[in-house]
Length: 314
Ligand SMILES: C[S@@+](CC[C@H](N)C(=O)[O-])C[C@H]1O[C@@H](n2cnc3c(N)ncnc32)[C@H](O)[C@@H]1O
Image 1 (cartoon, rainbow, N blue to C red):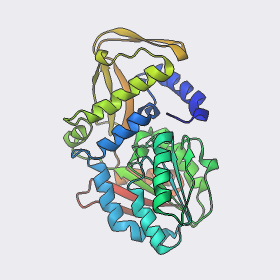
Image 2 (image 1 turned 90 degrees about the vertical axis):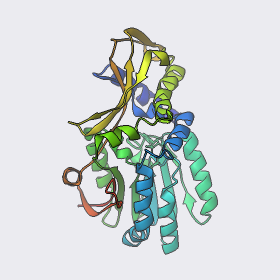
Image 3 (image 1 turned 45 degrees about the vertical axis):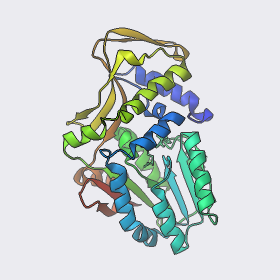
Image 4 (image 1 turned 90 degrees about the horizontal axis):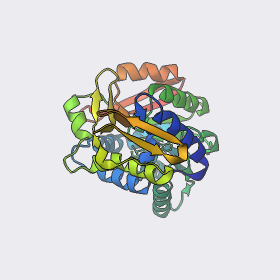
């Protein structure tokens, strides 16, 4: 579950989101221990292409990223199981510059496990995990440069444009001349492929999304009932994001005791659990620029599905 010091802020954010239009749960509720395990399963699904595409680019470019950044410190935001981060750890270790790795994740269990396993596999490295919200805890991160801040798996697409701008702006302000940011971003493509990626036949993605209701029932004493909701991921062509959530099958009321809320759902009303924005270079590059960052390199996989962006402060 989220680390204890972030709970008051999470409860407040949950209250605001549930009272919003559409009703929404902050995506952090997806990542309790079971949610993180389900996410790992998703990354192995044939239709969920992003991890494999990102691995393809990292496999081809990690050496170049290492020699261009010569990072002493690697920070990773939303590190999860940090499986693909090993491409960077290997390349930077081989180059001989890397001294410390600081993975940051709100899900304590997966953070602890991945930090332990990386410390065991890279004994010369100082592994300094930071449990918490990457949106708030940037000041607590190690800053010895040159540093590389990695934000992989298109997790940046789970933020709304204003949150994205805020985080990118704060990252840009933290980066010195020799530092860099490495962003994995999923690209706009055929909506049918996108919808398949979030609606797999085995039901793992649905179980992952539904697990947010289970977590909120348990942690906030809520009465969300799975049978009253259908899984309903949709491509929003205007916003260019996958709108991932559930739809109430009948009109009913859900109470969230710890937030002192009673929520009336109409039949067919949606509860959003996450967005996953998809990117285009011609829009993302100016967005980075507005946040004080410039693109140093923009690499894609052979199919052009996914991009890895190396950015520097302007
Ligand atoms: C989409 S997964 C990506 C995991 C991994 N980077 C990968 O590419 O496979 C998002 C990760 O970010 C973490 N996360 C989500 N929101 C977060 C937040 N606000 N602060 C810190 N970590 C967060 C989740 O716990 C999860 O491990």
